[in-house]
Length: 121
Image 1 (cartoon, one colour):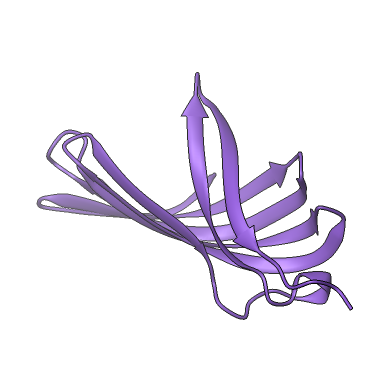
Image 2 (cartoon, helix red, strand yellow):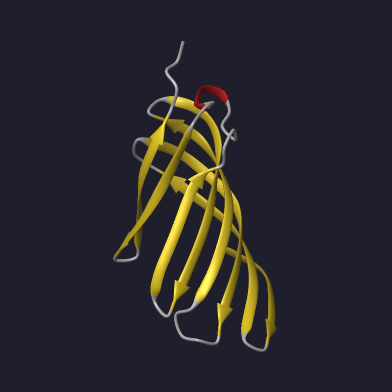
């Protein structure tokens, strides 16, 4: 994460960040994205959105696709949805649809990707 801007006002701070990740496993590749956050004065209450483009292979099929993140935390209770943007996939991943779950254990991130992909012809 690379911070870009902060806008502090009464009750909230708005921030933007650039995001880069590496993926290893059934999905091999990298991503670049842009995140917007809103932090409140209430402990553990915040929101974020992130759009990221992933470039790489998914079970050996090469292409790109875009994920949209929408996260909220209400006094420590988290809600997160990460979805493939419809019709964003290219190359051998055209037609990809699905949702991604992010798991964080001891500061390390792992992902469960529940997706559908048309058969190759």
